[in-house]
Length: 287
Ligand code: 13P
Image (cartoon, rainbow, N blue to C red; front, side, top):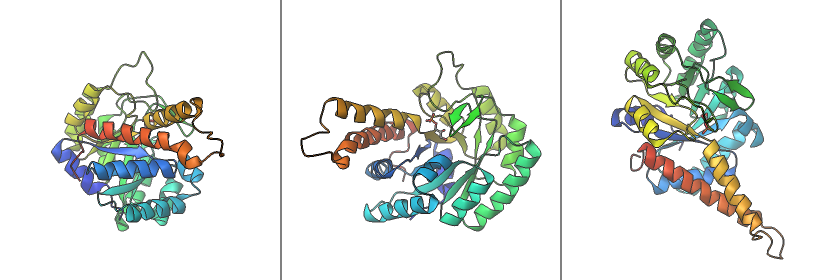
């Protein structure tokens, strides 16, 4: 059964570890992430961007697939199905479809409008027992066509949004989606510290988990980060494993092309990536 992400993230913040949000794009990714979480006895959050939701035929299909897998793969660890960077309209679509968690990305609205829309969505989500994440300060890089600059959030704005009753908060601290540029300045721990001082026990979220050095990940967790999002690293691992398989000519066995065999190395590569991240984030054994 899907659960909201609230409890698992409260436990993570109190226990000084982070739960991974791994984005899903298809059946293979979803199965790989769920099986790894179960094998490592780790809680997990499946992230779905609006683009990935559309690709997978819509949110109802995603909910059906994930619920079916939880049942048929005997997944007993806590699993949250979370809308990643949701617009106002798509938050409602996911609430309707049966997601257990949503993110409202109102960071591009003026603060007053972000406050008004977040307040409304907090109520709508909590009425259904669904957790809600908000974002303050755009996160850099490009995701589904949304480009952010990697700015640092204003801690007072974070406090204002936290006070609206959101369950966890993503704050820009210089993090970027995708690969980090060579001249990246690193995470701003000063900003993170100031945000945590003002928001207390609220679990904080680090987007752009790909390519952040392990020591920075650990420091961010020590300063209140309880959820870390990873997408690009799984994409890179999946693509590299698939490419290698094809280049070695293993996909053509003279009997046609079996998509299950073609996608198997990528599936294993995702499992290995998720395992490595769960170990780094400290969520192994915490289900
Ligand atoms: P990466 O693609 O950089 O891992 O970031 C994922 C993310 O933050 C999804 O919201």
